[in-house]
Length: 484
Image (cartoon, rainbow, N blue to C red; front, side, top):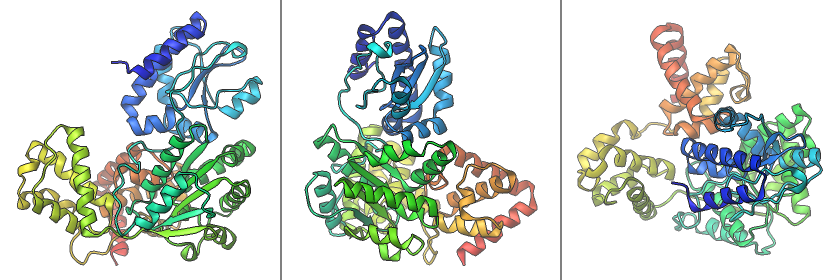
């Protein structure tokens, strides 16, 4: 069923544009509906929904994104599918183009509406276009489920949460930039997303950009190669609030660090808000250039520590409520089962939630009556054995690259030569088998790749291990190095 928001947009397209425009608008709306189902609400809402369909100077149809970052993400992850849907749905079979707002405006001389829409804008001729107003503005790159309302606070993160709320409220606290640090799975990404959503709610017209350091690096490199550097800089340096996740990833990448330093200096100089997250405090980011490291620590630095047992139980309770709405069951579990989960996953909220997800999907309607023995049986493959050393994806990448005489950056780049592709697949396989990271999370840590790429890599290495003794030996050797 078409939701009211989409229906209103489609109606606007049909009344404000020409007959052809209405037809194209309906085709785009159907394509968006299919993409929403295929990509999921979070991904679609973050990257596809803010785009607008416009008509170019020669009558061609153009998908216009608010920023070059969004354009590059769509080109890499969704453009092939969008082109397929468009060719099926557009009765006039007009070619579809993809441009950022700055590119569109420079080519047409006409302003493209900067406010995000639910994924559709009337494709009337540019000179007479009257854009359909969006119901609300939406920052680029944020995940909808990560808000302050869904964040569980406690003694381990109360200072970081307090700071995050002040930043989101646009208060003049005299601290800029803000850096939130802590190991993976402690809620840093959630806090950055929550800041973005709350800041957008309070200032709908503000330009808020969220991206990971991986996305910053890959997009910057692509902009240099495509000679679109000025547009890239314009996208970021006109942001009212810039949120950069996992900034430690930029360590060792000289040109990217230089660009981030100048972006940071420009934004702070104009009084715009900047928030970073990292896995360590600035002084410990030794691989980051000293000048950038100094700037990262010049504002306010706050750490996030592991959640205590009571907080972990609170997180499980809130997650159970969300699962009950999602899966349609009672949303209850025995106290000893929840306590077992809280005790077995003490170091990472992500792993804690992953354990509960596993139980919920395996037990289904039986979750409320699941015994402790049954729960441990379901989770046994996912539980860390006593004394096992925790292995990170970063370690896997470094050791795998070293084993094959490569650089760690080679495993994250776009090159697909066999000498790089096979080690990359092996590192992905090891990341899935030696850590509790999900397929999408692993993909993000390998240069922002799709989860299907990781799934293919895991299956391919499993197949080659059975067929190729040398491959099995490589996997065993790297695993032994990682486990010490």
